Image 1 (cartoon, one colour):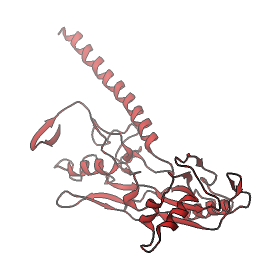
Image 2 (cartoon, helix red, strand yellow):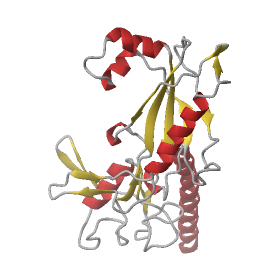
Image 3 (cartoon, rainbow, N blue to C red):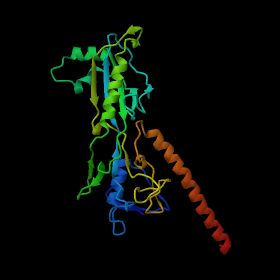
Length: 284
């Protein structure tokens, strides 16, 4: 069963199948906190992979200052994948470029020097083209979620694959400096750029930590997101990813959950049919 503390009371819920979907950090923490004599490393963790291979993408905001104003309020979005799989001078994946919501002076103030005057920030925001860049961070077993002796979550993370992200930033700047880059009918190439890599606390794309795979020694889940170690435990959030790619994971998480849902319906249907057949055979 699942033991829950609710309103100060301890309750136990039981079911034929348990589905965990707390997000990559909290799902891993839940399984690690559920260690017992049969599962001393935590549930579904005979492989010692639960909590490991945390990924959250490498993201940055690049702001280009144009000679002409950018009057939009609700900036449209687009996706540029020209450099996703690399380029002639760097044959490795770099990532994805999209617009970020229109920056304003208040947003710029958060990352600006304290002495920066407001009118300068307002002018920069008025003339800014604002981009969001995403690169893949690679699965590393040392980037992990763990639990301390008090049961609190500890997240250990060291960024990697940074050269790819820096080259993606450079490619965007190179494109924006081309003399035929026109916005609102004006030649807007201007060699002034600001960039800010987003810290871990500002990234919502948590995934990894309970990866799926064929080998129980290298993964916690099978290809249907069922625990290798337990027949009735499934995990359907972003923790199943074995790698993070360089795009938003939400739609893939949803699609995978629907796929696993179909598998569970089929499994429950087979069980119901077996029970019915048994009842008919016994005459009950």
